[in-house]
Image 1 (tube, rainbow, N blue to C red):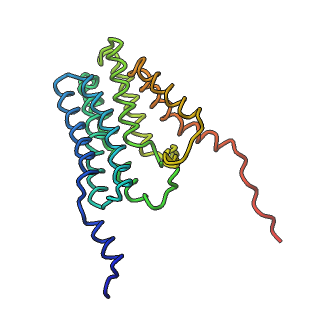
Image 2 (cartoon, rainbow, N blue to C red):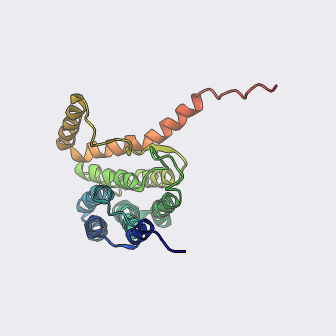
Length: 252
């Protein structure tokens, strides 16, 4: 059966490789790779900051692709592979090098739970992308989980704590983040926010206040921000349990 020009155009877009969005994905991949190298060289603060940079770049590549109408299947697959390195492998190695070496098998077990959780989370997201509600994520997003782990390392280094002192707390947080990724909890996706629409003046003021707070103590505020976001899924779950269930319709 002959394809219409519209179908041929869609097929070409799926097979095409666009430069601009994939440059952002490559930069995010490099940031994740850089975080791994710095963690292995005991430069943990550089590694934590690199993971946050990867998270920012990962948020830009999809938006750039949608704004320039350059979405492709190649870009989606490339983005998932980049996410696995930056938000799965890099945080696991950072935590292991910083705090888990003295825990023996429990250390690499905790690190592997996070790494496997990120892989399962990304695989589930790719397979359910056309099924789940666009306003909510199913399970904690891997960038947020990576930011939680990296933020913990960064804020503890900023307060002169060593990984050995906090190894069990770090292990508990890492396992908690890994299990949250594979949970069925709902997390707000912020995809319903339309940047092109007009907003009240108070919204701009709140954004300015947010950046001011971030500049005061970036490690602490970033950690608290993502820790609160991680807990938000559990809060929404508890609130859903308190809602009265709708009684079944009366039988005739």
